[in-house]
Length: 344
Image 1 (tube, rainbow, N blue to C red):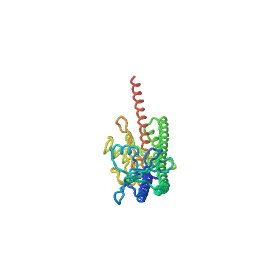
Image 2: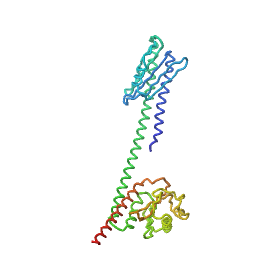
Image 3: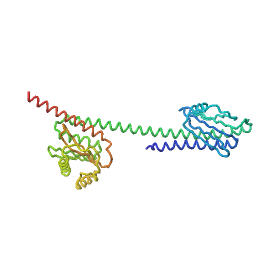
Image 4: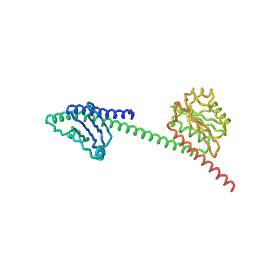
């Protein structure tokens, strides 16, 4: 099991927030001890060539104004500062480089108003404070990288699962195509072919009930698919439903064709049929129709135990129906050829 992307994004955000909060707090303490006017911190990731953190602290009387900007590139920021025009301010600036692992580069600028000379004692104080600062920042940066790696690993696991599912679906479709090809090659009877195709794809679609009704003969074939083996029956309740459906709506296509319909809220199922399907554990059905040259060959539906929006293997059923369409076209061409031969 993998954790959600939102979880790892939250972890990355928490790591960045901890680094920012700690850096601002540590720079405030250092600025108070030194009596500095401004402190600027910059940390960059050398491997990814991006800015990790930029913080600017400015003393305004007894309070500190803080500006932070994590993703901004330092070089662009420096260029913008140079383009603002000449500003004549008498100040002293001291630069200290942070002792971070080679993956990161960091420095701190400390500014004082007027001409200031750092005494040996102040310089030692700064370096002592930066030693602890370097250790803590390194730990926080490692936490940030760890959160990023966990997020990347989670995305990789999700991609692997999607790929595994895709391969599984493709294998089912190939098996389905092979089964349909064998069925078509063994018989030219439409009813026999459609029934055997339904037998082949019913377990692949994880459906517990498959029904095909043939208007020309009035036959309704029901296939139940328990785990052991399939059971073929002729259900009078389902035949009566299809017959009444054709009487009411004719052979014109319906808008809700090939859509999941919950059994309990199905607009055309009579109460007795709902109870009949519920007794078999069917919660929803997927209705479809088979046509050729604008003529209705058969009506059918799949009975599903789960009430879901769309079955996972809908494309598999579409593939089967397309193969059946090719078979019907083949029969039509053979019939036309036979009629032409008789004419000649």
